[in-house]
Length: 217
Image (cartoon, rainbow, N blue to C red; front, side, top):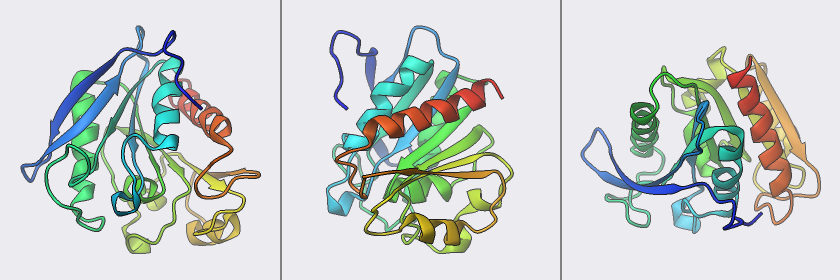
């Protein structure tokens, strides 16, 4: 999915500060009427992931049309963000900083915490009072221990998206890892693998549905 410049949502470049003193590179897309907020976490930076990844860019482009202010950012040590890669530990502080930066700009709005691959794992490992639901695309659930996925023990909604031919965690394996986590759905994108050369429109549609349920439960 590519952005149409004629309909692109106005975007601001931001610097967000983590609790351990790092400045992170971020961008915020804000529609005219904002009814919800979304933070999107990118895939593994040591394998080329950044906030300009195709799945992240799809959500960043699509969700403002559903009334969401969407913030994407580069994890520590990626792109213009300070610090060094911390194997999923310090990056949790990055996610919290992104949620709080968005909350400061749009206080009181429900936040959907989203991520893709490594970013999906990190999203599922972060709890925050502002988070109304999680949206995790192709979480490998290998970056951090299973017990650290705090979202899986939470009653708030969790919407997981799996690629039918994912090389790192098949839909069946994902369902086994998730187990009986409350209020959890798994959507399978047929024809797609972990890198989603196809299926971006389906991801956007699933995210829009999840967002609608947050705004109009």
